[in-house]
Image (cartoon, rainbow, N blue to C red):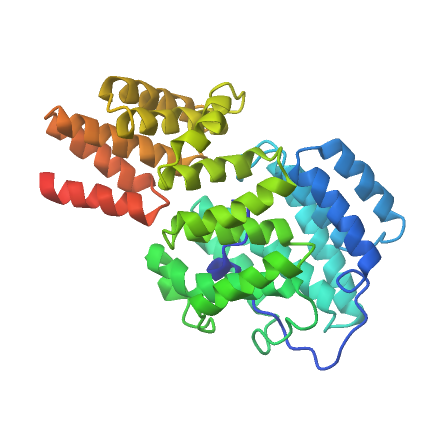
Length: 378
């Protein structure tokens, strides 16, 4: 997601304290923010050429502002979601993020407390930290996180300056507490990070959903992702996803998250048109999504292990075309195959599939079921 997108404990971001209010040429400029919203419409609706044209027009009035390369970076990323360091488009995406950092540094050379310089630099380093963490480069991830944390003087004090800061503050508060629970490898590195507050973080993300403009779509996505993958509340996740889908109806990644929320609530009648559409997708990530959820449908609704197995295996085969993405869908397929093998009393195969499900899973619920079944069979 997106995503795509700031892992906050790795991000290490909190909003710096600035002694007095500032003139913010982007964050407090309604005309510019309106232009940003128009760019976002094209970025998230998968019209990259139209987004590029609008960004090029904005360069005239903001030639040295980091928001320009940030919008270019997001336009590149959303043509290939969920973007990874192995993605063909990642080098171009990274170059834009590096330009964000360079222009942010120039703003801070003029004024070390420049809020916009800090905001965009932290955002760029945070994205880079997420990519490094996802590929397993923990020290690189922590290096990027440290760069963001060096800005901190007093935490979470300036959301009143701009609602965009609710996003960063909310992510930090939630993931500072949640992420090390899920990824203990990071725990030894976190002693110097200020404690977070998960409930406050969720409230701040909700504020970003309703009040922000620059990070509005990302706020929707991350909030939905938290409720899907960490809080096990698909109905709440669906609330944010449907808001986003209404605004960006062409967005394939949002559709995939919508399917996920619907399936978790056993609403296959609403999910099925989206699932079937993904079966003919040319992009392996979305094709695999459709195939795996067809497997879930035949297993859970139709009770057909033969059909379910066929789709699970198709999904896993399709996943080989895109080996660094789709971990969640692969874990669902492995878990489903484990259940099928268990019902066939092929217990050694069931154990192998359950172990694979737990190894690649990004969801606490899948891991919990896989480990419970393993404990019974081992």
